[in-house]
Length: 604
Image (cartoon, rainbow, N blue to C red; front, side, top):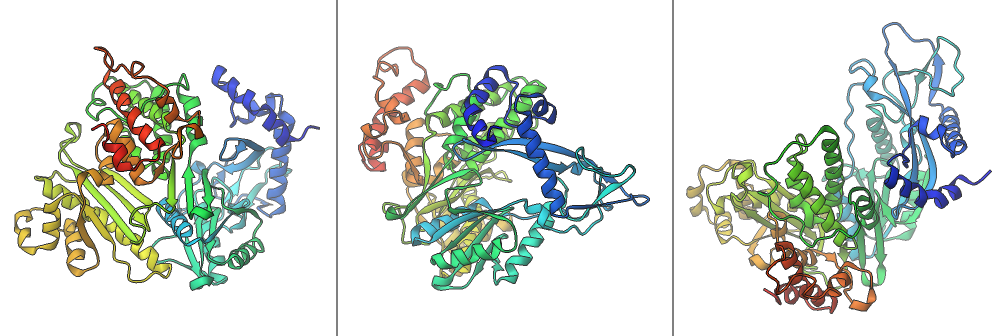
């Protein structure tokens, strides 16, 4: 019989091509589709392997159903697993419970389970890059099955199990799909890590540390995926052994992928880069009719989305799926699209056709810039000597479609590495530009203090975050109590930044608008400024060392096009073409290794 993994790799590209053409085949088939297909025997083998594993781990026991108790249904989830480059690796079959058939108070109560926030994950990677720590990743196999349930849950026997008639299966271990399984696994993980000397950091859940100095070890846990970081290789190996002795664990070695994010390390340069290039290309092949559809502008305008007809139910579902994928890209490695994605999320409950067009337009921008990656560390990062720096900005009453509420933007750096960003609409209607900047600064201060606390938990003491804003009025109000009487109507919670500045916990200083990287998070920028600020934030562009280094990159595509291709000198030519024409010069400057300031201002 053919090896399943070999067959999957050979047939993958044909399978995805057929999916794009016919819309039938899938890497996530139903049981009916899987058992009716030509690869039936591979799926049957995967399902048998799953059932045998569940029985071997003592997941359930056969019993009678007590009077008044509920039975929970199950279903099979089938998937062809791929790596970060979308290369298939194996057939995967998992038996999951239909948690929606559970009854609250009878077979479950609390269900909340924490995970490490993505900001903290980037923060740990940034510190590892700057300080040259060892970073390995591990994956606990069938993690939920390692936890014990604290409620009686009874399962209807799934097809394939040998259970006498009239009997049911009483679950002893947590099964995927149960409402409380995530919580039970988190309790199990927390108990074991504490037993081997780790403690949970007060600043954030699912971040654990042990030891100090060169013996410090940090674990970042996201359900069953974990990063283990330490200055000492011996401590990393010791920690992995202590976890692997407890549970079946896959040792992935030095981290190359985490949560689907490709992680590349250049130790000589002291740099770690994060990218979702393969993920974005997968989105392009799924959502765009032609892979050549590209643009340099993420969004034309917010007002352009307003109005339009409601999407039909099928298109509304597609819109929600697409925006969900865009949200993942924005939250993980692409801060430059946060504002555009935030505008699109306002239409999740009732999508309209203009919002769908804007989402496709944003995807075209990602297609153009799919090779960009987030840069953590490196020799040329700005303010590398400052532990925590947060840029903040706000756009006063700029959106007529949202009740003239203002938009805040903030981006935080740890030792010069971008680790956190946020773009959101403020809760209140501001009466002045100073007021809106003060609200934005107060919200940004909370994130800055979080990272100062995180560094404190990692043994870095005396960290004083710095806020940078382009509003002199905000700085004066934060420092001078005499100015406060003009803002008596503001909610007291927005004086958060003022109190911390006056107490000496945070410093606040001025930065020019042209150098305020948070500008990209609170309004749509034209293509030239989008490229300039993206570079300033920490996104590495293609062709940094020269045009000939990457002949197929988006930048080279721009450079190879003449001014006539962009419509320069023609009466026709839309606004997007004009912006793309300007980008020819800007990206040429990037390609030749010029500074971000020069590249951003050479054509202004």
